[in-house]
Length: 132
Image (tube, rainbow, N blue to C red; front, side):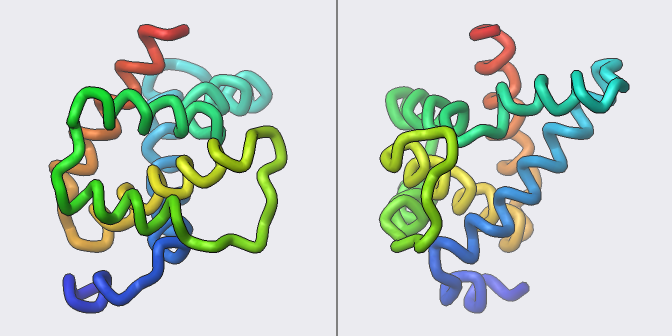
């Protein structure tokens, strides 16, 4: 997609893509780590991909000033987007933050910034690993 076209997408569309991209990277990481049992894979993945986990990660990223000003704007677009779905196992605030987190991932993927995407995902993995 052209950068101009990506700029026109709303925050939830970016989050939709970011959810898939982040989930794919985490699944690959868990398989590479040696996890192979489906139930265990799912349980392990929730430490990385749940709304609560993503909200915690984005809070830490913001505290550490890890996002560029452009990424911060994308995060706010995703966080503030009006969703008609409700959070299942998270507060509405965590759900909104996770949408912002996913929007950043989607934006980086769609704009071809794979190096930056992988840098942030690797930071997320390391951060979650420390907390486990």
